Length: 388
Image (cartoon, rainbow, N blue to C red; front, side, top):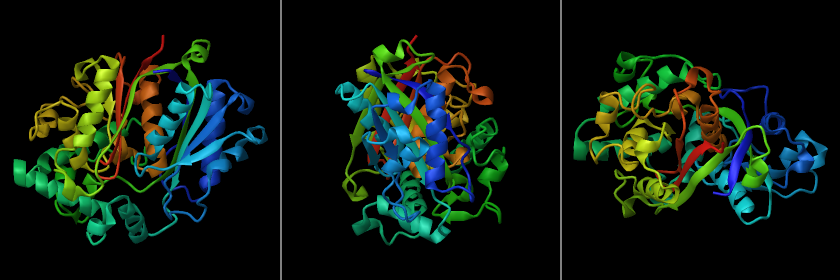
């Protein structure tokens, strides 16, 4: 690939009552530029990942990045949206601009402010990332969609509520070490596997601990072409960056296979000349625990129907053979839609520079990232490593 991450910033995710979309954008944009050692005048293009869809009234947000500094004025700025993969989509637009030699340095910001609306409204907004001709009447919004996916998987491979509880417990344990996580609490396996007043069933077999959190938050990163990055204080290069889209209707595919995810990983490995065994860690899209389970299989960690083995035998623990979501994932960190993909890249870059603190995976050399929009519809895989 022809680009590197040369600076980044990340704010804590959660409920930020005193912030609006503008202030979230400004904070991370300023911090990312400072981290990269660049000024606004040195940025050629700006991409803003912002799903929104009705979370806030301010729909046209690309130029809000300019509120960070007047020197941004008259630079091209574009808002990107691709459901829950919005942040990665914005990064890909930056990579494409650099590959096309339209830009040398690009600022990418991901943001979402989800808590200004009710829980019912959140569900109504998120279900729009499904195929409404088929999905609009599913109870529970996207939790209902993934509840149905879980039920179909159980019918094929047996009840996996135990494996899903172990995934939830792992990610909450990892999230304790993430200063940006919304829920920094080790809930434990017993709590996650047990239906209770504090952990009720939400949709199908999914309990509250199987579902990611509604969040406000933002993250940002600066991309630069490789020649420019060589002169900068840090640089994380893209060994691969692949996008694969699948059919929107779940009725047109076997939804338990996550074939778009599988194809994106295969293309990323082919492009990079690497394999799964080469990776030091993976940050994957655990919007629901059943998603992480299916992603084990789609990335090739286990055969189909055997994803439970990866969590039961500890392969994906922080000290396992392939740590998955050492950040705590969306499950612990929260899932502010437009910010999620950018966050995953920032946290992976931190791992590869040895600056991940209590999240740090020992001797991290190569990081894989999977971010998806909808039910494995928009699938993005990145493979990152230090440039030098």
